[in-house]
Amino acid sequence: QVQLVESGGGLVQAGGSLRLSCAASGRINMITTMGWYRQAPGKSRELVAAITTDNSTDYADSVKGRFTISRHNAENTVYLQMNSLKPDDTAVYYCGAVAGPDHYYYWGPGTQVTVSS
Image 1 (spheres, one colour):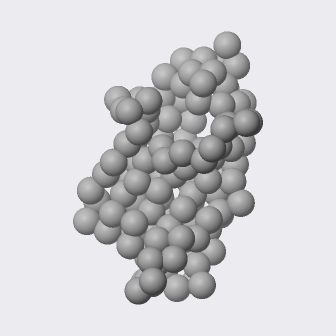
Image 2: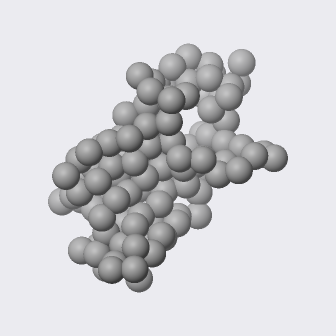
Image 3: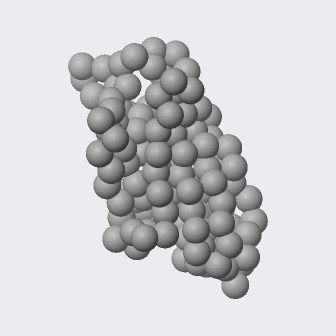
């Protein structure tokens, strides 16, 4: 089992910045890829950014150049630095982790990010 807890969400004005953190615990040695997803009201959950154990990254086109994902293995934490935020970035942001030989996906409870115009 892997447990994930997000923090750092909140309310920010357009153009502002936020930094999300995701702390992993449990069988962390089984984790491979970790990522951030978001879900806005009435929309499907979508990938925002992902990072592998060798720090390869992938980003949604909508956040490229504005968001940065990073991973601190010693702290078992993944971060998402979000700059130049837009109202369209408003969503619940979820941390996810792939772990184990079955590539099971674990989720955190989510953190709300609201960007006002």
